[in-house]
Image (cartoon, rainbow, N blue to C red; front, side):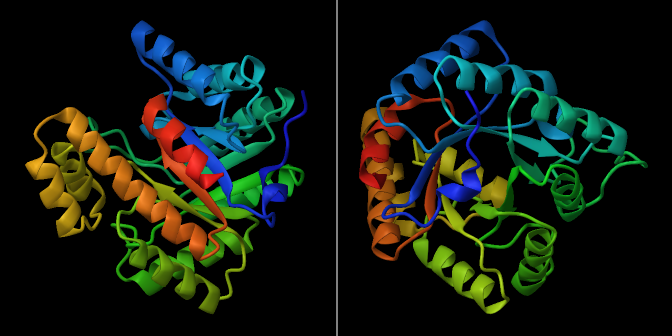
Length: 289
């Protein structure tokens, strides 16, 4: 099978639909990702992505499971690639392998340092910014589809939203084909972000990243980790949920309402952060279609 360029999937009559996997660390995790992938064949995402651990910690598993997702389940696969922890020579080697394996889409990210290494030092012979990684890929692999990250509520390290938009514009100018956003629970942040991007001259497709809430504890953790705005109505509903099943349904209903509004406003794509679980993707994917 030849990998399809994701950049060519936009502009149709419906949003591009995708889901995100992460490489498992245990045998049960391995069984879980394969079970989920098998179930997702029914709704046929336009592509699936697979993450890359902090500091490149899951490098081989990203490759291995990316190939399994493609070869067993016939998905178009976009592996993530981060600058953090790698030299330029290592990045070149990884990209060479992606190309040789026929994985011709990549999500180009700066990446975060490992959480257990507070004194982590970037590779002195590496790339400092995602824009540099995008530029390397575009110059050396012009046939690749390249995704990059956008932050509707601002990257935590950016001083202002305008500075963050300027950084995003740099990635696009260096050759990124489309943008996948960080998760959000309030669509108004996404719509404002898209307006700012267009005003800045960013004309590439912008995919909305959604995470169906599973519990009160989960969304509070995300708020602390990503500085994500959690609407009080969602937070209060989750806090009042009688059990896990009711909380999951609240999260699914909220995400469904987000999808409906995004589609009504002609969103370019919808990307579900499914945490290797099939249930939310199966229920919500049909509404994206």
